[in-house]
Figure 1 (tube, helix red, strand yellow):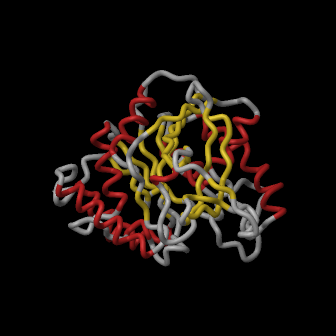
Figure 2 (spheres, helix red, strand yellow):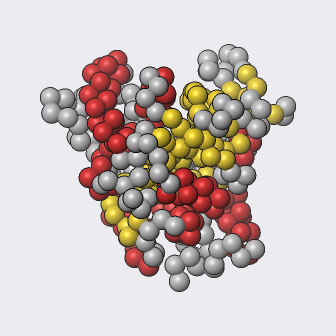
Figure 3 (cartoon, one colour):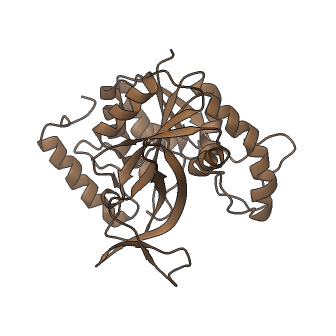
Length: 306
């Protein structure tokens, strides 16, 4: 069996954060969150990473993260997500600048990924060591072509004190398989716990801190890319036609459609690790302090690629 590889989504621009989160230093020697993910992935067994960026950020990325990763003991490949990477017969809507979404991003890396099972992560999310071990071990085992996995986090380990977040809220059956996932785009902490609104704040519904949520850490097979390729024209025809400026094709949506059609299974792997990210600029000091504490405890060397 071909060894699993890691696919890193790094083409987003971080609009709520106000900058390019993929290259923002958070480590003691200037490392970005992505450096820590690659370090943890290599420890778990991954030997190859595909990083998906945009041509517009290529120079800044290569001058910072890319330069550091020359010392990373992994094979680093690059793929590029661009708006004009669409099937023949379709055109980019006038004025459209928003990327086509995370499903399209992994589709743009199809040739670079090749015939290997792969894990997908966000470049600007810190997932923790256990998550990489769990997903690598799952991908290493023999599974049917439409048997996927995801790492589920406790909602309470993923929310910020500084504003709302979007999370894929998961329903999991007694056997540990995902039955349903719904994207909640405005989840917030409040004095009584955690709640979400689906009507722009007119009403709120509580969510328990133990609720499993997706942080976009998926384990997929190469056949998944064929499914995305087949479904992408439908997305352009139906969803982009209805919302030409903003419609996006996200991984949870693609997998959700497959679950509804009963054409895939998704094993939910669990982790007790706390997720860290920089959704807002005020989150950065929290991430810096957490990583420094982990370094002080010996979980990371002082300088990942020395």
